[in-house]
Image (cartoon, rainbow, N blue to C red):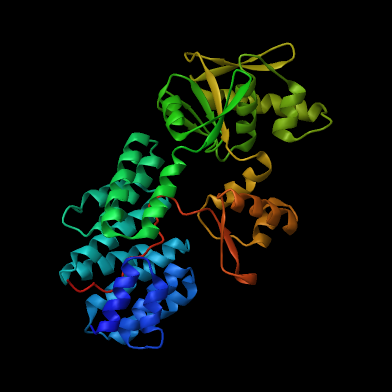
Length: 406
């Protein structure tokens, strides 16, 4: 590689894309195209970055297998950051195998970690953990070790193992500082602050307060019955009853849990579950049916007793009942719930899904973005909204070509 390519690569390795572009902006040879693609990705222009990387892969030619594989790894990382989940897993598997055969262990390991991030994003946690365990991070460069630690932190947070998540983030920060990549250090510090921010609201005994992830971990490990409105499950002593596909039953369970140890009037239950302003006999008959279904769903966890005014939750063994509600206000919680699927949404699509006006959705998104709960990609009509990347998705990409030694 010539001196300009080396200088551009080193600038990108420290998170300075503008300096890299000063060296190679007017060049169209394969290494320059690849580095320009990485620079554009670091600047946030993901569409242009993808185009440049594809041009670079074609320019490298069929014999330069390792260089083309590095471009494929970089393109797959861009796809993951943009939440394009159609084909990154297969591309990463093939690219990782090719790099392993050519002795590029650093980029091969990075491809494995990217695939682990993909598995983390789609909720296949056991496969992601198995993939992380296959690669020994000790001989790898600091930037790759930081990427690996971020994935481990993301997995620990999904598992609600907060001590393990903190330890992984400390490891990631140390590796990022060793690599001297300032944007990556800043991103890790931002992720670490998430552990100290309120993650949900705890409603118990008629009181409400914000709780952090470590407090949620402690609560779920206790003997209390926890109605988790973030995931729409009911938890107790390691048992989880999912009501994600039964919204009426979950609405009833949440109302009963919020009122425990008291009861809930029938009119209040009708308003919560069916949004019925003026109840008639058909509404009351349906309520009895749904209460019976909820009794069966709860099984040995709790019963539901009829009272003079309505119904009350009756735990079998637990001495406490609590509700975990989303930390955001209810007005924006529905928007956050849609963004949580990891896909990029247009405001018109969100408005259609929510049955609201597009301007109402835009105001909600602007409020969420101001609090760091949502982010926009693209401009104009191509603008899309999504949840911020989960831990383990650094925006500083690995270079598609190995840096020269020295």
